[in-house]
Each structure stands twice: as structure tokens, then as C-alpha cells.
Length: 563
RNA sequence: GCGCCUGUAGCUCAGCAGGAUAGAGCAACGGACUUCUAAUCCGUAGGCCAGAGGUUCGAAUCCUCUCAGGCGCGCCA
Image (tube, rainbow, N blue to C red):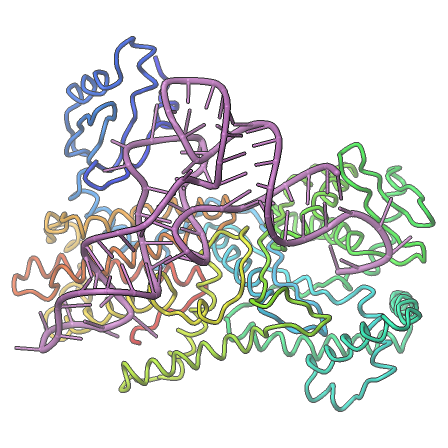
């Protein structure tokens, strides 16, 4: 006899709607019962028939297909969405657990380019999802505010820099210096040595070095915050790499105590050959530290400070090896929580004419992309809806939403080439499409409110109305039911997105919902004469609207009522 | 050289704890606005799921090899 769990695992969703809502393929039973699978399916179907949850259970060849009771689902979904409001799909599963999401982490003094959008947006959404599921979340912007690059920048500034220019236009000016450094260093390798020297000084607390560094950091952060504000993104901590500079010696010492450190060519390394990995360089021959040293230190610090349940790094896939090494070292140090550290990688962004390169100055500024998207939205509004109120605000919500949404609509791991055409496309599976669907639903509701919609929305006994005075049978057409099914599945989709740390799983579901709604909207008039029918349909519209809004909110995207 | 990732429609991608005829969007073509926002909807066309073997009742999905592209492999982050 098969266990219940095993049967549960077999359950699948049929490829087509008319094949039912759930199905169990019966091939696996063939051996046990020594009968052909289609016969088994038929016998089971004949025996269970139907019940209150399933309006019919039939076999289609070797498949056992279940058709759920549409009316029951309609009622339960609509009531549930009403009761939970903007919390529909949320959960308390994460209660008492803290999840750290490290994301965005731009490098100081470098432009916030299109390449940064992925970590920024993906991380932000993951944080939203964890929070929605009841986890305590800590969003950390692990600023790249340390390392040899600052040596380079200090040298460049001292050699060619101009204070006023930097004050006026910090990032481009600092970038120019950084680019110039690399140009000059090709001719004059001594510059590289100087840069390392200055970084060493910075680590040792040299006053001039620290002051310059602090200044670079401040002006850069000001620029970054402007972009975060545009996207509505906030952090709980900006403890970047520099924050750990005074905490590293203790960690290096600890590594030594645990006999993990080895001397090699004047540097100190952790040998990982046993684990099929190249060695990790912990301390350079000149005594200064490296990225991985700071990351190990940061992880230990975070465990002590936050006692995290998960420690998530939203960082590009180029750094796969880095994280493997780092997690392995934490494990070797005896930390059993090393397994709770998770690297969430994503693919590269390149430009049409080749790779991006900060050093060569080949970058697309994220701010320009956002601004262009807003501009285009403004044009579309002027063309399609010139009487719209709050045009500017809505142009921002839609334009910026479009750019963010695009990042969230594919799996993380794929590389992609930035293209203005794709980013500025507002049709089909895009942010504006979903927002438009929401605005459209809202518009119907507003129209209805004028005369007879009030009895649903404003009723003091709305629960009784929903419970007893709605004919949910009227929402069982295919187009209506597919909307309800998508909403019904949303809570588990959110959990799946969390488990896989994949925002696009949620985005996909929201697109599906918008598509299903648009089909329904097109097929059926909502503001009909029959009050019973109108009430049922309006409730479906209201439910859809609210869920779209919740979904977009999780993606960090606004849902304007009009556009 | 070694390791990791990717390869599905012209383009961008879903589907990959094996299951029913491989799905969307864009682009193309043809339709639908005096009626709830046409940033919409409907239809047509488009596929040797990179290739070759294998496992299985069944493979886009699992295994092996090959090819193509990307990334990474001690003093950058």
C-alpha cells in the first residue's frame, strides 16, 4: 500500500484547465496492483465519485483528475482576501527568527551602474518576502568602502585631484580619477605600489588617509541615497567593509589558534586543497587584509549581534568561489551556523557593445535609466491620459516600477545584456501592464461606487454579506475561476519564492493574475443590471485589485489607482 | 588546464524533486474601442528543447560525453 505522503508527492497540476485542477498519474500503481494504469485510475475514480470539495473526480486515461468545487473556492478565496486585507498571503512562519539580507553593496567612489540594480532590487524583494512571512529582517548594505582601491583613489586624488570639482560632482569626478589612475599605472607601475602603501596607511589609521576616505565615503553615500530613495529602498545597516577593520586582527588570531593559517610566500593563507578549492588568501605579504578576511569577520560579527537564522548574500555569481571558500572556512572554524550562510547569486549584466568596465569608464548610470523610464512614462501619459491628476507622481511610480519589475521577471542566474528597448518596453509582461490592470480594476470599482457599490464596501456587516448574501456560483466561469485559482495559490507561491530565494516566482504569479483578470474583464461586463451578478463580479474585481496591490508591494512597486 | 553556470520559437524567457499534444511576452500577420482605461483582448504563424549516447513504461527535465557562450581559479573586490 502506498503511503499518504507518497501519493501527495505524485499530485500535479494538469497542463490544461479542462483537465481539472489536480491530477494523480497512476503509472506507479501499476506494479503494485498488477493492472494497467488506466484501469486503476478508472476504478479509483468510480469509487470516490465526488464530495463537497470536488465536484467531480474522473479518470482521463491513466490519470486521475480532480475538479475542485469552484463555488467553494470562490467563497473561501474572496472571504480570505477580505479578512486578511493587505496581509493576504502573509504568515507567521518566521516568528522569532532573524534573516539577514545583504544586498546592493556598491563601491564607494564608483558609479551606481545598471549592474547594481540586480542585487539591489532582488535583495530588497527578498527582504520584503521574508518580512511578510513573519521573519525579523535586517537589510545590510555592505558598502565597498575599503580595500586597495582606496589606496588607488587617494594616490590619484593627491596627484591630480581637485577638491571643488569633487564636491560639485562627486562620483563622476572620483571615477575620472580612478580611470586616470589605471591609465597612468599601465605606464608607471610604481603607482600600484604607492596605492598599496596608502591602503596600508589607511588601515593603520593615518590621519590624512582616514580623512580623505571619510570624505569620499560621505559624498558617495549621499549620491547612492538619492537612488535608493527613487526606488523606495531602505537599509537597516550600512556597516560596510571598513566597519570590520578593527575586528579583523582577532579573527586572524583565531584562525591561527585553530591551526587553519599557513604561511606561503610571505602571505597567510587557508589551504583548502582537501575540499577541492584553491587556497584562500587571508593576509597579504605586506600585512594588509583582503575581502575574504573582512567577510569572515563580518559573518562572525553578525552571528553574535543578530543571532541570525539565515545570513543571505545577494552577490553576483562571479563570486561563487569566494563564498564557497568563506563558508568552508567558517565551517572549519567550528561554527555550525556556517550552513545558514547562503549565497544568492545572479548573472552578469553586459552592454550591447561589450562588457561593462568601471576602469574604462564604460557604464550606464542607473539613475539615468530610471530618469529615462520616467520621461517615457510622462510622454505616454500625455498621449493617453492627458487629464490625469498627479501626473508627475504617477510617471515616477510607473517608470521606476517598470525598471524594477524587469529585473524581477526572470530567474536570477541568467546573464543578460542591457538594452534600452527592453527596459523601456511597457507592453506585455511588464510592470506597467500589471499596474495598468490594477488601475483598471480600481476604475470599475470607483464607477460602481457612485450608485450601488457602497452596499458592499461600506457595509458594516460586510462579513455577513460575504458569508450569506453573495451568489458565488456566478463566479464559476472559466475566466473568473482562473483568477480565483491564481489568488488561491498565491500564499504557497510566496513561500516557494522565499525557499528558493527567487523573486521572479512571485512576479510570474502576479503577471498571471493580471493576464487572467484582463481576460475576464474583456469577456464579461461587470456593471450589469442584475444586482446579484453585479455584486459577485464587483467582489471579484475588488479581490483581484487588492491582491495585485499586495503583490506589487512585495516587489517594491507602487500600485497607482489611476494611470 | 581545472571548477562553476548557461544553451528551449526570429528575440527575451517559463517549464527541469521525470509524466498528458513543450508554454508566455516581444517582434510579424489578421481581427476587436459610440458600451467598465486599447499601457488591453482574440486569432494565425513560428520548435530535431545545442548535439550524441544511456537510465525509464515515459526524458526539455536524471546520468555520461561532446560542442558553444559566460564566469572564476594567492597578494582586486
